[in-house]
Amino acid sequence: MRKQDAVSGSIGAVPGFLRPLDTDQIAKVLKVEELGDKQGKQNLPLSETESFDAVEQTIVQKLESEWSWQGGELLNHLRSYAVRLAGYSIDAEFTKLQLQANATITNLRAISHQAEAELGPLREHFLATREELKNFKTSHQLVRPSRAPSNRWTSFGLLFVLLAIESTLNGIFFAKGSDYGLIGGIGTAIGISLVNVALAFSLGLGPARWTKHNNYVLKAVGSLAFMMGLSLLTVLHAFAAHLREATASFIDEDEAARAAWQALLHNPLHINDPNSAYLFALGMLFAALAIYKGYMFDDPFPGYGAVTRRFAKARDAYSNEHALLFEDLEEAREDVISSLSDGIQRIPTFPQAAANIRAQRTTILEQFRAYEAGVETAVRQLLAKYREANIKARTSGVPSHFRRTWSLPHSFLTKSEVAVALTEAEQQPTNSLAALKELKRLSQAISDEYEALIKIYPHPTQMTES
Image 1: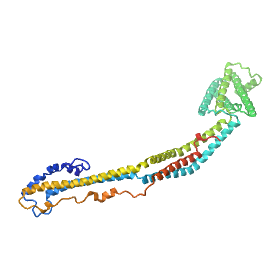
Image 2 (image 1 turned 120 degrees about the vertical axis):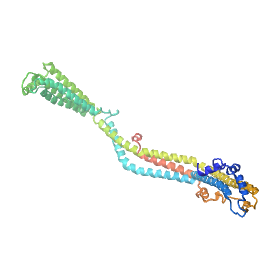
Image 3 (image 1 turned 45 degrees about the vertical axis):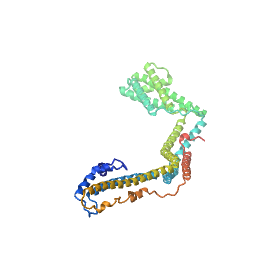
Image 4 (image 1 turned 180 degrees about the vertical axis):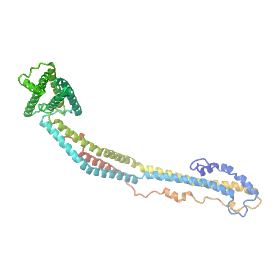
């Protein structure tokens, strides 16, 4: 509690703004009559005294202190009313919303130039790749979507595993006839396995997919190349099988290779050792797996996967840049339009709300004026109690100032701070209907600017094909 509150509470005032004064209680607290009797018996103050004595000054100071505190509270109330009135100014609200709307329109127009520089090329590239994909599907009579290729790293991993397994198993078969044992056998097997897996994968990625082409010439070329590749793989593994039989006879490696070649030329199907037959079957099985992985490495129709990926990449690039540019812009647009809509709803209520505030302010001013009169009355009553007791007890003449009526030195309502708090900014009368009409126009202008921008640079999902 402030010092004035403590003082006021001690003299019989209840807490709060414009709290009433209890003069009887104040008189008891200050011992007005007792001090009057005591001073009177001593003929104090002297008859010729013109100024208040200590008791009178205490009475005045106590109540003037309470009056000053109440004046400060009045100023706080008046300033609060001034702030509330400023919030109900049609002109101020209209100007604020008008500036906000114009700033948004300016930003939209600036974004239009930014979009032209940043989104323009991406949009053109996206449209070009979309047209390329459309023409590709039309020219090749494709109605299905492109099949997403399998995970390519997984495919390469599987090829590596096939190569390792085939090389190891074949190496065991070749180790018996190699001068270098198992290491030498694996070395020979790695060479055969590399050729097997690489050629088989290439057959699946190339010729096998070309057999699906709509062009009969390309289909025929692809089929011929695929058959030639299969034949080459068969020859490779037949040679490997004969080579294994030859090396098993403990012949010199060069002689074994010549013997295997002669056997392949003159009697290719004659294989005596079951392990050599197993070697042939294993190689063809791994070749089939490699062909399958090559075939599934991309969409079966040649070129369809590449065209689709170019389109998807261009679409994603445009979509991502579009999101960066338009997401915040869309949020800002909605916020401003919402503010304008709220303003359009609230502005018609401003005059009545301001009138209510001014009425409340007038009421509190009148209450304070009555309060000041009450302060003067309370001081006069307390002084009268003191002086009556003093006069009854004294034997000398009465001081002349006892006959003067006390008044407040001034009204708090005449202070400059009050005048400032009551001053409202001079405003030109605002036509509320015209203001509302302008706010509606600005709201529509913002929507039009945004729609014009989004029409030029729509999201990829909203772009219709021409």
